[in-house]
Length: 556
Ligand code: SF4
Image 1 (cartoon, rainbow, N blue to C red):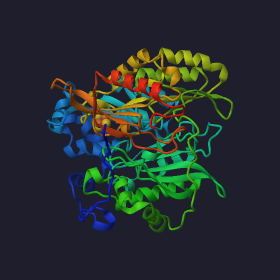
Image 2: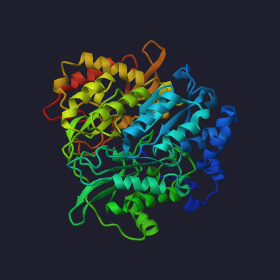
Image 3: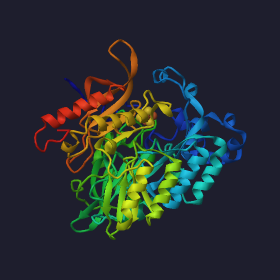
Image 4: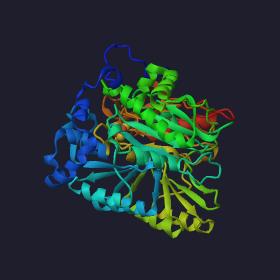
């Protein structure tokens, strides 16, 4: 069996201008840069409210529809009934429906039950009861009509939620530790910092024309629970021996088709300085990021060219105007970062981590969850980067009733290992880039594996993670799973093209049994049909539990 190295991010050698504003000037080098230069994406909101919502889908300017709408969390969704095998053959407009996906940003994953209820009600009223929890702590609606968007914004903003910069070449939702401020073993609480970044910089025109998306993560929890290695910028809680609690700064992580793990700059950032440093990194990306080619425009490509030393020096000299102290790396992860199950908070109350199946919920379920949480004495929930949800602040005596109630709405605090660690992207159902259906495939695989592998479950001291993508992009982080599945059409062995997956094996982020993140490897020729997925995973898991040595992890 030969092993392929995934495509890697390498420094540019073309010698051509890369569209770096601070180096090459601001002349747009492609159509995306042209429409962004012509009119800031944030400005489309007025046109949606004043024109498009009144005059309907056909009145929408193409650059707004396919470009600027994203600045407000809106993408057209895939027309139903188009086979994944035709995705590459059709023009984008032929794949496009007249309905939208709308993403609600939930910075830090933090929602009050009032907000959760509103999110659910909006889904019921305007999105055919769809509400997926994404692996970036967002909620994603489908079937949204442009006519309804102003009323959706009104209702969301009434409870201090927004879709501002939920997509587009902008600072996306800020990932935050789901147990921020409540965990007894927390090093530093990122809650005020997340709020400061959101209030100062989200929707700021100065940072709303970036080369591409810019992803942020903050955690102060020792379980390293925000997938920090795959964000453009991340702050990870550390205890500095002289300066006390603060953050270790990571930059340049991102997956997609050319994955690269983030790297430490080796600096310590005091909690009160995080927003300024975040602004500095985002501004470096704006000013020096490559804009010529879309597929080379993430911060990771600049990091590949500069290296960490230059990135640090430019940050300090040009953007902060002072040196940052050297700092220590984070300690190895203290435990699973998904927070599933019942746990004691530092104030003696409990938080309860619940698993849906691959993040698929409905507005009705979210409203009922808000009711159940309140009945248990809670007013707060948190979404996680693992498509899960936590109910906070539950008195011990209310836990049992809450656990019983959530089972009735399809959530559980004690999921099987397969339900616990399987995540899936949007896939063929709604995504225009998709080749393969994902959510239903994943749910069927989980049900099958629960049935077939009940006998080996007790031997799985750590669940094996299964991440399922509907195309070569990596929205479900396939390179960071024990078993990552990249959707594509494959030969079924009889010469017929059927939906299937290229298999990636052995990836993972830093965790309690893995000191450092590593990207999974594709195994040449190893592909599995969507229908054959349960058979394949069953074989792999059985082989692992019967052949491993004591203490051997899946990736080893
Ligand atoms: Fe769409 Fe591909 Fe992302 Fe899945 S991985 S949501 S199919 S772009």
